[in-house]
View 1 (cartoon, chains in turn cyan, red):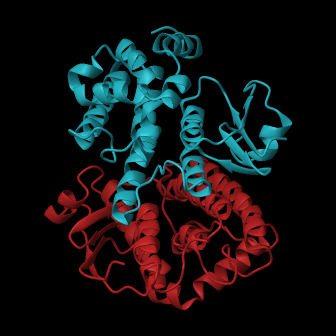
View 2: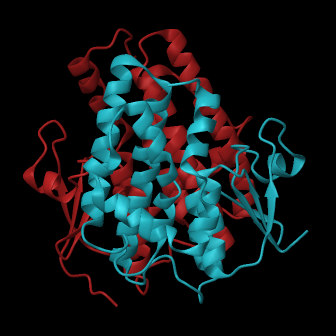
Length: 215
Length: 233
């Protein structure tokens, strides 16, 4: 087994976060595509609590949960391309916003795509509100942390291919509400690590319709 | 290295997340001004300091707010890294394991025991109690792996995961008193049961953790305010 292995699923935005971080750090690793319908012995052994991908295996030791994996990658390979800033206050802000993305955006996404009627209307309102909050937090900066691509950018950029799907299901325009976020996403896609990792937005829409039923 | 400077903690007496932060500040030997918040009538200061979630705890250090209890604990360990005791271990993998279980506690344990309190029927309550016990069974395993035979999750003294789990103990005791649920069965989770007693006996816990009865009184006030079909003892 390679020293660094990533148990992942090709379309997972959470797995993609890890791929981007490993690429940015220049870490060689073995990518292991997992069958989520028939979970492997290795996956079940490495993440017995949640049985989910992504899982990073380093020297055989598992790290689970994508944001925890990002933090681990940053700490295990500290010299190259730091993802978190040095200043403790700036680090706290980065952690806060990464958590916000996982708690708010992901929750809104699930509700937007799996509910109908009033519940879906509320999900749409909440999603627009959350995206606007992030747009406001980004402000006029190039990246969430300032001038350098970092932790929050990695956490959020893999969800940007899902905007097309949010727009189809919610009947709204992300760019209309969050022009800075859309510009930021395009800026991030210029990085090779990001371009290689992201799923095509049309493909995401196709997968979501298969998974949750047509809009 | 940052000095102590102006440090305020916006809190609420029975919030386990606030207790968690108070424990961390105790470990770092940092003094601060504690400002009790009325969550039914949120102050200008709270709304200004945590506009996104409008929740406690909020640490305000030199006028700058830090929100989310686990984020605050990590901040405290970093900004006062020279002071008091280290909250995080040094090894990146051990840190990742501690973070994993802390996130698990917040995702799974807290909603389960709050669910016991809010349950509208006996069946719903029993369901939530079952969930809580599954979580504690997993934490028993986690303790065995992390402690490696030592008294605390972090080893010889309390660390990140001890704080993450330990801040909930007074609520588990309050719920035991109100609804008769036994969370720490020496037969089922012996390591955790022993750790819970040990944790409650630390100087830090004795100074910072409120009495379980304070939580009971608060819970009854909430039930009266929002109405509940099932009564506690």
